[in-house]
Image (cartoon, rainbow, N blue to C red; front, side, top):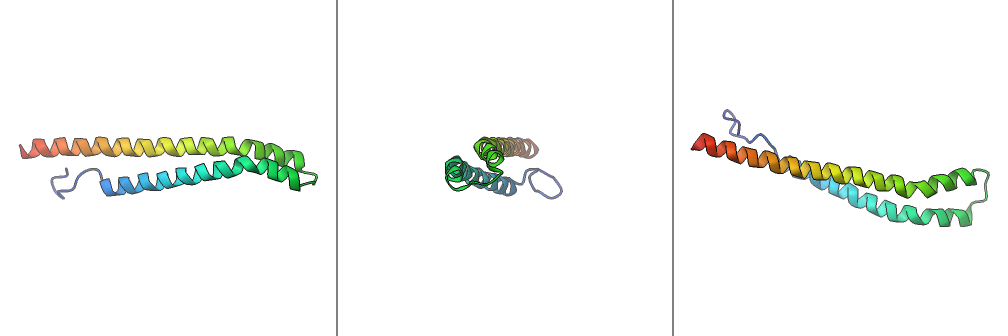
Length: 100
């Protein structure tokens, strides 16, 4: 806790906000992953152009790239939650020591 302002070092509300935004992004990426898995078959049925092979390669790899983004954002959300909890615990300990 900051003695001058009386505020804790960690803005818990902001940290929770970051976590919730990241959780929403992860949910959207999960939906995108599910949709991307079906694109290859759909595209293969409807496209006959010259770039077919290149697009098929891209679409076949797209779910993997989305999955990796999902992992990245999930880890970041996990880090935010762990950091917020750690900072909160430290704030409480510091407050107890300053009051005691």
